[in-house]
Length: 304
Figure 1: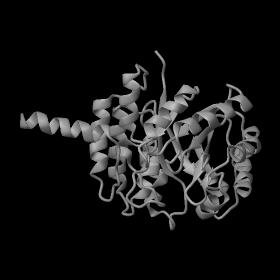
Figure 2: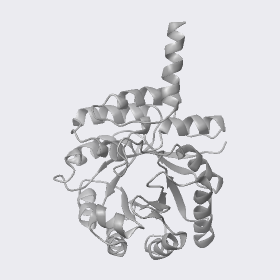
Figure 3: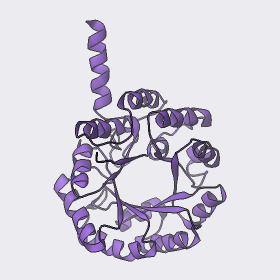
């Protein structure tokens, strides 16, 4: 049976969208529930400025908890080399570094140009211990919330600069806006495969703002991608479009892959239970379709 790996990003990308600080014990309970649904790859926290993002002031504590779950592969987001050093000191062995193809978007996020962020990536790659793993999240790989569609050539040029730095790193192309059509997803991934070969580890990070998250995930799957980011309950907002949904819902992808007889190792019923708890977090901005449909079906059954 074909297999895919789902990287659950709710505890980082999703929680980041919530202004009120979530108690560490509640975060742990939600991570534990996702783990018992079968999730084995998870972006559990971010090592960032605690003043800028107090939501992650408990990063070391959350990382230690996740590392105590047997078989769990917790990754942490780091925006700079300085924060990567802090994460490694805390015991992290799987770092995810993010930079944007779009200069305007990258400067808005980290006050650096993409090439300046590329230099940070150089430093992080050089400091990685022997068995530690590195992931590169390429934001605005397809489209920028400020400047619109990103030329594929621009994305490819940045990848040509970055891929040789850490050839074993996983490269995640991110549809930051959710505005991309499946044909564009297929086109860019196909070009990346052609340029760098099948040995390059690829992943796809979809947003569902325009209802295309699952369709774009399937488009990436058709090009050979087998690692996909998602957030239970579709947790996460879009800063450029208040009220719009953000990350593609994990349960939507599991429902799709189950129907395709593609194994993710995740139990949909248990995942829906975890997603319901996540949706109850104060300030949570959720989305997705399967959870809503399952709830409506349960209501109809109880009424009958």
